[in-house]
Amino acid sequence: MALGSTYLALDPGKHFGFAVWQPGMKNPAFGTWKFEWGNDGERFLGLQKKLHRQHADWGGLKAVRMEFNPHVHMGERAVDLGYGWKHAAQLFCAAYKIPFGTVTTEGGWRIAFIGRQEKSIITAAAKAAKAEGVKYDTRDQLKLATIGRCQQLGWMPKTADEADALGLLDSWLLELRIDRPWAANEVLRAPLGAG
Image (cartoon, rainbow, N blue to C red; front, side, top):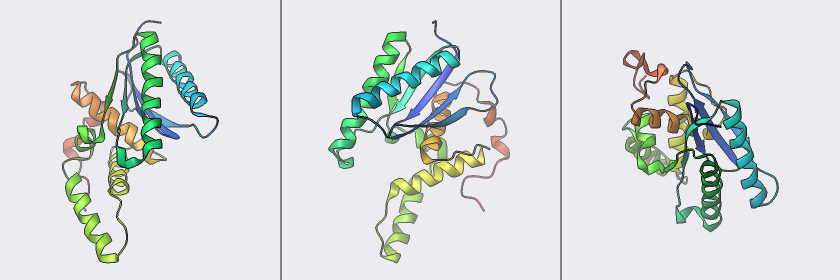
């Protein structure tokens, strides 16, 4: 099958968020794949089967991009799984000659999606957690901001994984300078977090 016109963004994990878009669509399609079964090899093969299904259903994939954060602080097991997901997707893309790339959260996709208030979200949440004497997790607050941005655009992701995949897709298309139909009314929207 030849390269199609569909872009696929992936947020990996046991609950794997995905978002797909091709020219002519008003909004991206998105969802969650669950990989809570079997051993690692079976899960990675499951990912390849899901990618094959997307490739067939959408008339060919033009490119695939996956979030990849090889952070040691996430634990050795999470790092191993991250590399496994990445390599499973790379193998699939290599077999079909589909361009594949990875991006880290720190690589800027989240800033491009939710805006430059990322640092202020982290600071405000850390202060609030300190005042309440509870442990603070920046990841949760940033994921909430990403979900909020999706809702602002009219998308209703069921999970943070879906929201992250949508944010990754949006910022990727912006980076590629591809017109995103949902961005047409951006100048009329209030900034994220505005009252």
